[in-house]
Length: 265
Image (cartoon, rainbow, N blue to C red):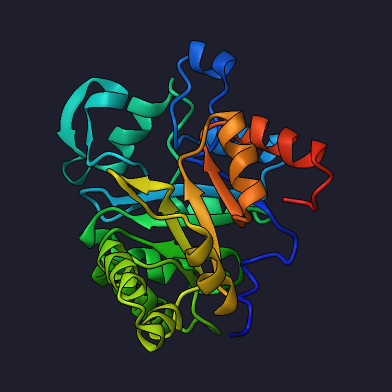
């Protein structure tokens, strides 16, 4: 399997989860997935930024995790019911709203890991990333949303597909196939993805195992683990051979990777 250009040959990678909100920034009210959070991640040296995509009432793809504004802004309205200028006003003193178009334009050196949170956003995500597929990975808990975004990118004239990580249904099939020693099935499930982005454990079930790492690496697929914020966990997972850490503390993870003398992030 040919490595997608999104995946730098230098690993392990640090993926700044929803940008970077340092403790100092948090005291100033800077929100995750804001313009300031993405800028902070970039300034800290993060090449990869993980974010989430929703669609506003007037059809603008924005970087936002929740489907409503309650947690971030104390407003119960859904993102889908708010126009972009209203979001800009709400986020003005929380680090600033950032749309997907703005993110791709303002941070041309950043590789974005985009989780399509809303079905309505899939087409817009695909269309917007079409000129930038060499530095975008598209994922979603829903395989259908992920595939719809990939189809939209192709329809919009993308020279190649974005990199991709499978949804939860595909990952469940992969875990089952490995448990049943269905080697061909495992290879087939890994054939069209570039990275497995998974938690270390799902409930009592451990997902990141030496066997899964071997199978993924044999297929040319990277393994990125989320969300890893404890430095001892970071070190342990790096020792195990994972290729990427998705973390709220990209600054700490970057320092750890550099201290260990590993390649660039």
